[in-house]
Length: 384
Image 1 (cartoon, helix red, strand yellow):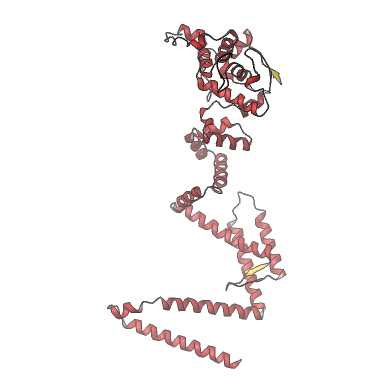
Image 2 (cartoon, helix red, strand yellow; image 1 turned 60 degrees about the vertical axis):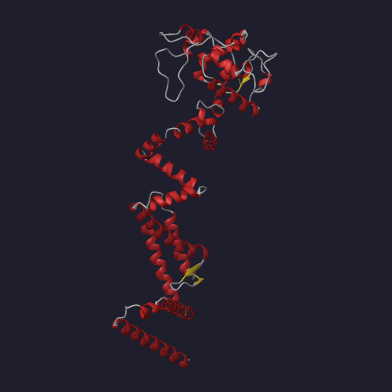
């Protein structure tokens, strides 16, 4: 903890930048002191006369306001204290209090009321957290023990956008990531700079990719937009199809290795032999050991082909399974053929002039094939 005190004359020379110095990027420009503002400085027009409230302010309040105006750019708890002990909390009556409104304090300081309120709100939030005294306990001109400087960035933002709902969400996300909210707010306010960094730097692009994936988990609208963008881009669409194929193959191998089940070519799901499961586990371990930047497609294809061949051998080695597999395959083909034939629009053939002799020949050949199939099935049944 440190104790606030008014800056000394030597501090003034050190802390206040030269009039010709340009402010650092992302900071607010230095403001002239009330005395300089009154003189006009470089021919500038003098500010309007102070209001009655500002003119009636007592010595400690005026001193705090002027020190705040001179050193506002540096921020920190000491400057928030000057606001907190001299500005009336909202709703407090002016009568009987030496404190002034934020507007009057800003007028005395020679800066904007918005800037004063950002310090005010930072102190208010810290007071709610028990880090500093409440406003009511503070007296103009009185110093109190202050938190360490490294706690300040968590409460103060030099950006007015931080007070909006969007700004609060960005600040909360920044805090969760362990970074200063002002950094995240700065990026959010300059999307063109973010785009340039993503285009130029692979590391930034990777961070953006990870953030988008995390965001899409909870944002169905963004999922739809991304899917639509990918579908409309030929190169991306092809890459997604390739990755999806590799993922399906890895999933096939993983199901055998982890669940001990195989899916036969005809679609049956049965228990996998121990040797087949061990081979699937071996291939899966090789894939899981790949680095993030290594392509898994070739490994997935090799694992899939090896395991699929072993599945076919397992089916042929089991007489009962082999029979069920062939029966299932036959039924599947029969259902497909039946569906295709049922979809023929015979009414169009009768009502419209679409008849051709070749149609009849094809149907007659189909009829003979169906009759031959029926005869073969009946002979096999009689033989049993």
